[in-house]
Image 1 (tube, each protein chain N blue to C red):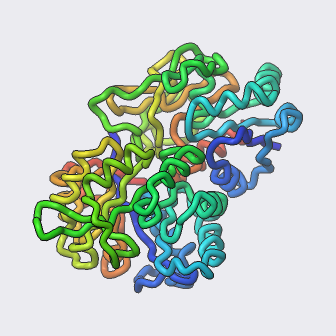
Image 2 (cartoon, chains in turn blue, orange):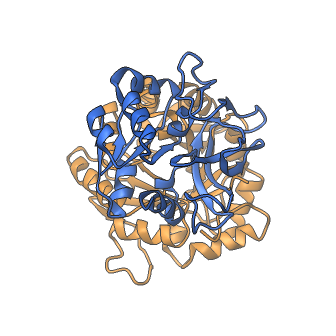
Length: 196
Length: 255
């Protein structure tokens, strides 16, 4: 059972719909016990970084940290990816999980923000998440903050400079774009995650 | 590089797409779910579903339509028409929309933009502006109620206010060009696109690939929306994107 973590932010329906389409057993839950028992965890997120504070208050953060410690595959989407870093300029008082070093930053002033639309990736061929996905595929983004390139970056994209479109370390994955909104490419990525 | 988006719009009344369509291999050319899927398969970057009836008794029909369209669609879906309250918006999101389009209700009370953005994020709020050239030909007025009434507001000023209230995108329709096929209003699009920092979707007047090239290049549009061009005559959205791309406009192609 894949747990789609509901922490009161954003629209979880589209992630559920995509996993249903792939024939995966999944449920949307805000119950830490169900998250702790999941075989895989997806943390979606659109909206404000501050909304992730609810994860800490509700016991969901502990459930997620515990599961990751036991080797349960984890996928953070959009703000879900950002939360895996140490924090964000969007809400300096809200701390991230710190699984990856670094902070989320604003786009430079010379480009429109948010970054909305289909942008091209440059994919690291060793990535497990991107297995079978063409190296310069297009995916759908909508976000105002971003993570710089790190040594865990497995896909980057270009908008006001290069940034991390996806990060990966062992069984921990994060994507800044929305695979559930990225057509066949996005479905392939979700299917790769489900097959881990 | 971020690509320019081509958005296909479906006008829906009572659960059916009302403009004529010429897709092949469709069992039912008036079914919004089948059409949205076909547009997506042929290369549309997003789908907009516009409820043109927007009569109150048809809300349930619309929500059912949104559910059926969303179930088979894995590209962004915007739903507009008749969203008047935060509750209306919440129901449309729960049915599977990624963004909602608001127009008259936002002009009547711009705090609606903020309330929806606070709950669902700015990226989910598209403020639709129907603009018409005024007596002074270098200005445009924002109209409400499907273009039937003037709001008395300057379209550019309203776009700026919508942005400051929390809109994530502007869907800008030229009433002067809508349905004409003579090209987008690039002057209008440029005036708005250069006044805000959020993406602007140009709409109204698309007749061919060159019109899209012009509105991206000269109008600084981030995306362009069309309905009838995809319904009559132009069989492949892919062909259109290739033609636009061949003129140096970044397109998502192949998809």
